[in-house]
Length: 475
Image (cartoon, rainbow, N blue to C red; front, side, top):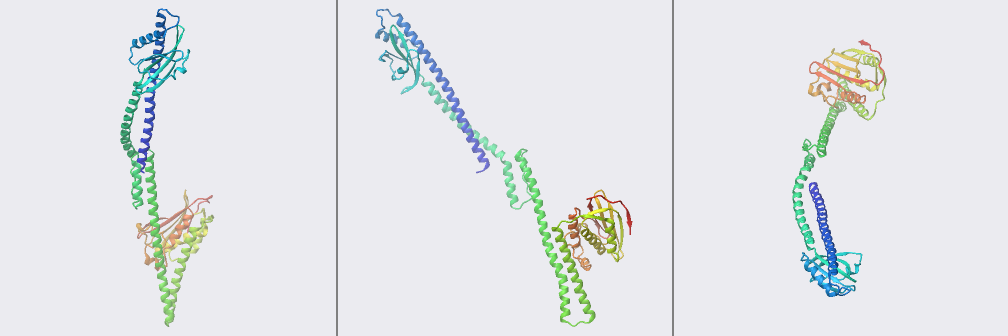
């Protein structure tokens, strides 16, 4: 069952119960008030009649010491005829409850007489074929006679008014429920509109339309829910796009890895088969063995790089203090015989890092700069203190990287110029390894490059302890 239908149904049920109880209470209250008024008038009339009876009995000529039955009948008849109400009925009984006078239509039993004594006025409501009556009873003590005076007053109008009141209220209740149903249907539809819009949005997103958003039509809790849903949808869309990119990167990685394996393996197998199946002279044998050795070393380097990337992703680095000067001296010794001109410029200081991993980053960056530069080309290796930490920069003036390629160079097996990279025994893993290592150190590569003018790659290691004094050094 729809929520709007539930809301409508429960509203109608509550309205019906509320109107039913309130109507019953209202009509019944009016009835009880009218009935009490009629009973009061009947008791007052009974008192007046008893006083009139006693007065009339005292005015009768005294022939006897005891009031005679025929005199009682005469007085009762006069009292009945003298009333203005045509509905007045009288019954007078003696001490033994023998009826001395009774009006036509007075058909009540003697049950009320048994409850009536000299000090009590009694009444009851009775139903007869003609309608409803209030019967009253009182004891009259006059001229040595104890008589029972009973009256009956027709109150059928009060009961008819109650039935009419219930009938009218039932019709009004039905009309109000119908009008309330129409109004609540419109209100329920308006209140649940945000829910319907959210339902439509979830169905669209479940069908794959992740860019669809629910329209916010209110500023209440449901409006806030719609707003939060759209925020969640934005985050979900970004995560899905990220997952799709990761899946595509993984597919590209597998394809590139297979291709990178295929190329050196084809050369190794081909030259090995040539050595096995042909008798070659010394020069060709050396050339074949050299190809096999070179491609084997390339496979070995690629395997080590992949292993470093995997290990780096699964382990945390053990940081320690290391002197920036020590790092740069290590790099000077490492690239002392390089064909390029390496220029070092750095400030003294202390950095917090895993030394071997940091050396791997610096060696890879300088090695890439050498591969991108022409022989005798200048490569600048710099280090300086900043507010954020210690910044390393490697700048070359070689081939450069196109802007659209710069965001992809840190992906495994990605190479801007594949033929040039392979000629330098590259596999596109160096920058990917650097990016993983720097992520462990809370840093990242910042690349600035322009084709034909060179590339600048820098990263900053955040401070984790006291820094040493500054000092510039050129080499």
